[in-house]
Amino acid sequence: MGEKLQKVSSRGLWISTLAVLVLMSVQAWSGNWITFFLILPGGPSNLSDQFLLAMKDFATYHAILGFVIGFGSIIVLIFAFVHKSSIYVRIFAILGLIITASTAMGGILFQQSGFQDRWPLGQMADSFVGAYAAYFLQLFFMNRTPDFPWIKKMKQAS
View: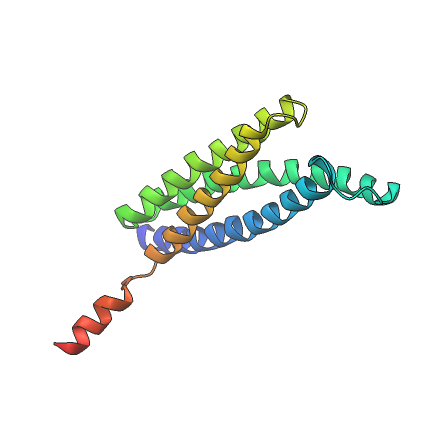
C-alpha cells in the first residue's frame, strides 16, 4: 500500500506542478492583455466596443483562473508532503503557496482600489514572477538526482 501511495503521489506531484506552471503562464498572458488594453491610461483609443467587452470577459476569466491556481497550489503542497520528496521540493512547494497567496492579495487589493492603486498591481506582477520561479525550481528538484551543469563537468574532469 505504501509503495502504491508513493507512486500515485509522485505522479500527482508532477502533474499538479506542471498544471500550475501552465495555468500561471496563461494567467500572466491574460493579465498583461487586460492591463495593456483595459486598465492603463493612455491606451489605444481606437478599440472597438466589442473588443472592450471581450477584455472585460477576459478579466472575469483572469479572476477565476486565479482561484484555480490557488487551489492547484494547495494540491501541490499536499502531494509534496504525502510523497517522500526532498526537503527542497517541500520548501519550494511552501514558498510557491505563500507567494501565490501574495499574488492573490495584490489582485484583490488592486480590484478594491477601483483599478487605480498601482502598488497592488506591482505586487501582483512581482509575486507572480516569484511564484513561477518557486514552482519551476521545485520542478528542478523533483528529479531523482538533480545535478547542476558545473557539477557534471567537475565529475568528468576528475
